[in-house]
Length: 132
Image (cartoon, rainbow, N blue to C red; front, side):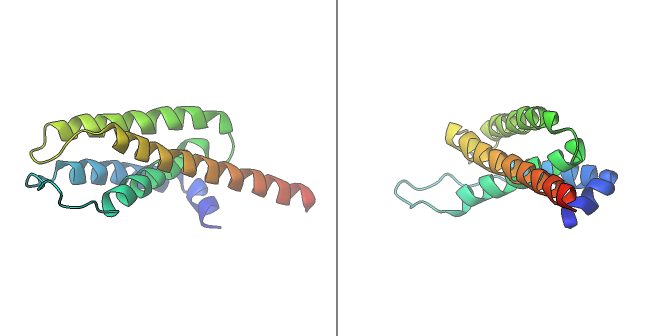
């Protein structure tokens, strides 16, 4: 499976993790014109936060846990949420951007979903091995 391949090629997993971090920072640095009141709500920013931080937490988990030390999941959560908070603080200084606790919540949803998904994958793989 693809996750096993990334676990074996740990350096590539770390590189992808760093690319994701840089991409999140870059996207957060893009300036926007102030929004018009009543301009409507878009689903895209919500999806962006969940998906971007899902992949950040997933690749950080693969890089650190490598299918073995599930005790490191707590550290992955702390690092990922801290990066989400720092990303929101960074946006405070970008014209046209705002800082929002709801964005940190959406980031956390993606992070938790990634951790749960990877943990389930690890447990499933262990059970398959014991049945073989």
